[in-house]
Amino acid sequence: MIPCARFAFFTLTRDSLFVALAGLLLMTAFSFEPPLAFEVGASVALVFSIGLLARSYFMNEERFRRSEAWRALTPDERPAGDTGQQFAREHFETLLLRFAQGASAVAALLFASALLLSLTLDDPGFDAIVTAGLAGPG
Image: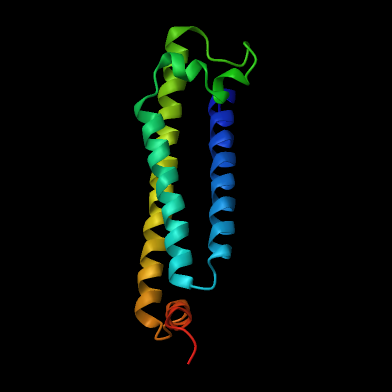
């Protein structure tokens, strides 16, 4: 694997892990209501996927040269010439789309889990507590 492709892969992997950590923290914060927690996690994954799609759509030569995957490499590690740079950009766009596809699959799985949990749980849960608190004492 060429250094540019390897670094782009690990950069996107790192970004995905940070988003996954944020999603897990939000899901833990909403763990009192499991279907809601899964919906929050799915929303985080879906927003990340849309962000990757937008990044891929607006990627051009100038934006690729300003990306971390290009700037972190030393000049001798970068692909030579315009053809090499265009190949690296196209490979980076492909990686962006693959990661977006994975994030959307995670979002679909989490949304399906939220739906199944909401259908199987008979406990009204937090909604009953809030409704009872709003109704007042007695």
